[in-house]
Length: 421
Ligand SMILES: Cc1ncc(COP(=O)(O)O)c(C=O)c1O
Ligand SMILES: N[C@@H](CCCC[NH3+])C(=O)O
Image (cartoon, rainbow, N blue to C red; front, top):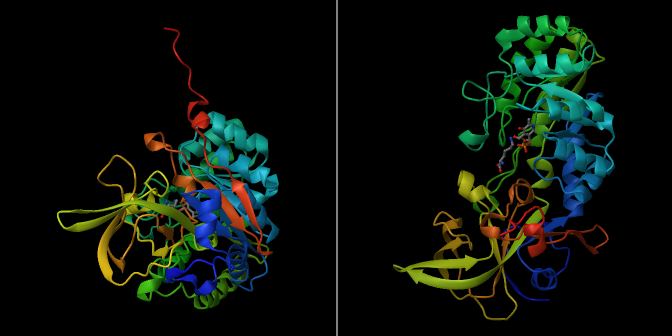
């Protein structure tokens, strides 16, 4: 077993006794590693959020749609939301049936909407024009409408998806036009949904959004479901003492709100939530290797193979991920130093962690980027013609399984057509 010099969050025993340096050597870096036990525990926490009996957790696959992980999530009794035909496709590959998939789309073409209708999944539209499109494609069908409750939340303005400044959802003042379109195309409104945004760490905004959603529901008697959205946060700064979202307090208050509303509205109604990050973020550590260390104007840069093509969150949102250091040799880090960890992409903004105080890092060290399982691989790209990483899963049995191969150079040229010069 190689010595691990800094252990910030591995009290959970993330590697289950395996050696991250050996995993990096066997599978190469960059490498997304997932832990099945942690993934299952997050699914169970949300499934047991409330006691209200008709409560469904739709996993939001945009956070991570690796089919092996989707299989585990489904085996825990969760259903799934989808944002694109690709997500529907991956979910079906993992075994989700049409009635377990909720397609929450935004500004889609007729072709895409037709795909979802033909696949038999429930469709939610989020504008009057998309409702009209659905009506023309599927007259007499069942549809859901996403409303904007007016209350937004999120870790960055780019991921707040309700409130005044967002493209998402139908304004509640448009209920009469929604009714008119439902009538015109003989549609049944099967449910309404919302999503206030991504990552809240207190329950306030989420609970504050409910009265507005419930007041919309009152205008549509007989709905099968009301979907409250996702956004449940995880503490990315555990090393600085950031505390997890208090699910038990949120659950208690939510439960009360659900029972109260169902009593008034009708107890047949199902409530859904659609979390992504909470389920998949903490079950993954992303491994990378340090290939260069240098000083530029006396600041130390640690250069590794995790460019923003592998993990885009720090560059897109200034997101913070804890970094652990794993080392093969027994060379100790004798001092702490301030460093900036950067990737191998041809942009100055390719910064993974800026100005971090960490134990001294050497060339060849393995870095473990924590909480990388949500919006990690799914937002990766081939920018600079780099290869997207491999993904492995540490099973509950302790076995390691490859669940996605690393891209190859041939993958880069797969859809390319050369000229005949
Ligand atoms: C419509 C919708 N549902 C669910 C989610 C999942 O969000 P989160 O991963 O924060 O739970 C998102 C992403 O913000 C979303 O846009
Ligand atoms: N991609 C964002 C979350 C957006 C969720 C999708 N609406 C993140 O990494 O935090």
